[in-house]
Amino acid sequence: MDLKSYDFGSVFVDPPRVGMDPDTCELTRRFERILYISCNPETLAANIAQLHDTHRVERCALFDQFPYTHHMESGVLLVRR
Image (cartoon, rainbow, N blue to C red; front, top):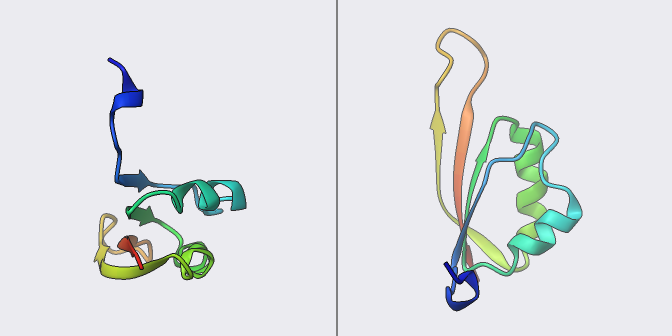
């Protein structure tokens, strides 16, 4: 399979609790759509702030994968401005 011939417009990221590092944030800017899954709302907010100049939040959702605990998963679709 020759991946050079594909034009990828979307990227799926599910970083660890520390969020995406600055280099990864910079790489994701290349994509039209970013689907970001996060288990840490603080690092999610920080990464969205880093991407704010190139992308906007289109949709978001919360997922209660661990009932009766304080842990939640967040899903955010960011689209290029």
